[in-house]
Length: 358
Image 1 (cartoon, helix red, strand yellow):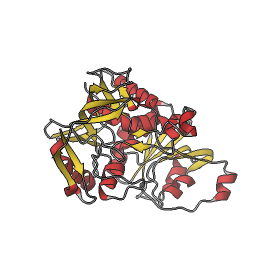
Image 2: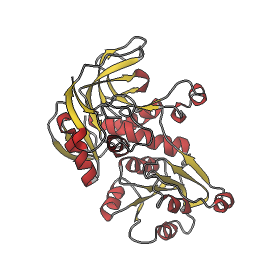
Image 3: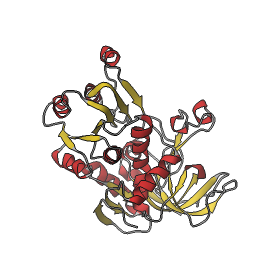
């Protein structure tokens, strides 16, 4: 098969299209004929550069979130058959730690990631654990299922399961024009919350408004905390969703949390350390919730919501497999509104669509 192989860390020129052996399913695995896989800045670009915090073993095929058609089934697999359309959860839990044994695989501290610690979806075929796959509803295309399974599932888990967001509360979503933040806006709105979206440019704030935000803030256009307090009658937000881990933004996010509110911190690619006001944490009865990893049930929930039209993916463009380096360069250079996909066997497409189509 053809695959884009990373053999040395560095620039996009290190992404080499090669002929490699077709994967064979191990026990409990399935092999997919890849339809689409998305480019994720926090995984693909940092892994390629050698800066990803949890390391990677070369040679490697990137691509954390492939979707495709089941074409081979390993021993022990009973829930899928050849021809099934599936999306894939990127995180592979260890299955042995206390969290895994108690049904909390999303909190596994020994997990591995597809496209980081084992070969991923920048290829014509990929082998994945069957336990990481979810059936795609007929109403969803592979393109939309790929994005929804990756970011929609996380938004449901982080906001609803971990953050306990309730109807009538106010949710403040940072990075609201990004893939995860955009789904957070949609899921928070569906939950009945008032949604305030934070972005770093007017066009990105306007995009978040299109996704359903009730109000938007350009944090570069004035004092962020003052703007939040003005919109919430001086109270702050019941739940603050912060997905960058930026050491300049994170302390501001904490200052925006209302009395007895929650800060869901679900990203660390911004890096760095921050100072924490312990007195504010104590007196304010605040909760800081670290959220990473999802369950297959989150994929099922998000894909079903996508099929109903409750949430939708925004896709900017699609590149063929042989243009993976060009696609990564575009993502890094332009930071587009919408996901960029790699699709083996297809031609380049400029999509810029938000509504799912079968």
